[in-house]
Length: 127
Image (cartoon, rainbow, N blue to C red):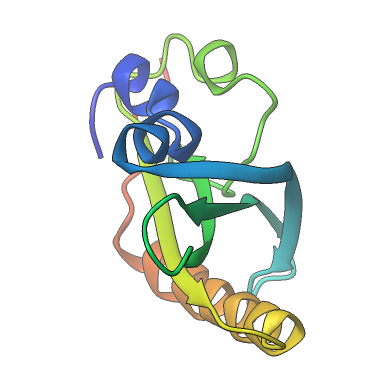
């Protein structure tokens, strides 16, 4: 959690490129339903290491101001004016042939995360 401006613009596409990773394909939205049935949206993106072995990494990320998690096209504008912003960024290594299995595990992780996080996240007061 942090100030909306810096938190919204710090995307993995920026930080991983400075850590010897290159993007592989376009980012994709992933929607999961919370226990209350509400839709929570996250981005997923794949990156490959430029180092020896060429490790393949899948990253998932999204933001929230206290309600549903969102994956807007431009988070900076979507969350402008918010006093603070929550961000989730999770990553895991993909090994050959694990794509679908990992996607199922990722969706389950996000469902569990949303259920638990909503108990602790504080929404900013409304004016």
